[in-house]
Length: 352
Image (tube, rainbow, N blue to C red; front, top):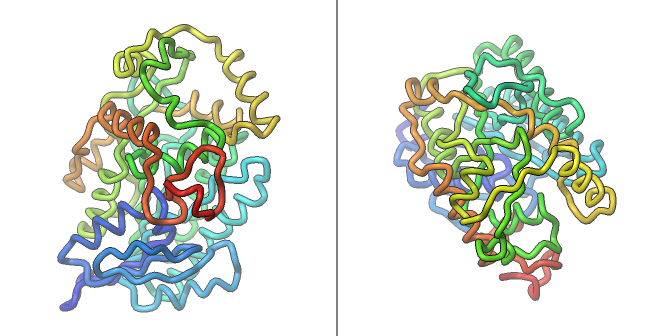
């Protein structure tokens, strides 16, 4: 893929949680000659070898083929988590926008497409043992996020059939966290009125223990290294990405010094549904259902074919993220900018 001047890589969604880590890792790679970051708003952040374009993949006239012209690879990360009360809006960005990206890759004759899929694409699976990449990817139909990720798996099946000359890689990471994403993820899942300072162990003597709530996590920078390795190796297909150990109430309780208290699924879901219905909580009860049914992932393929292993454990990842929540951490891009609870938009008074 590389040339005398290094590879040219285009990254969509380059200013978000995953995008900032991917751009940073690529900018440090001597095999990468240039990076074109696509985002709805151009950031002040200026990593080496990186140029920016203001592009919204949800628009039909987004000019994606022109942005991709001459690229050696496209890494597609652009994704909208909100508005959760308007699934048609997220469908336009996430599904129709992704299909525009795929079509533009073909039109520009880009030889490599790396797509950000997710553990959320998987069909319900076990919590007591891990599954590999052959597990069905039909998602959880009631949750927009899971439904959209699963639909794009089918779209890529068709794309690979019609464009066998394009090397397609699908990354299926667990939940991704880092210190700099704390403010963004608080707003996405907890709402802009939830103070991050509440994530202090002394304020959490008890921890809800919901049956089935056992998930995997990964540091975003570790995921970014897997994306870089996918460019360097002639691999195709899907790769699970996760760190050990799986996170449940017992592990979290030990980390936070909190005592797990059993809470029935119905009680937890009812509380989430009430808060979501009142628009106090962005995360929907359907997403909660999906999380309860996600399988644990076996990452052997990434270990053996990419030579990838996470540098941080899942508990280290969560500890770093909680510290970021407490301090209102962020980064100098619009999605990741740290803000005080209750603030929104680009108002300077809200920045931290």
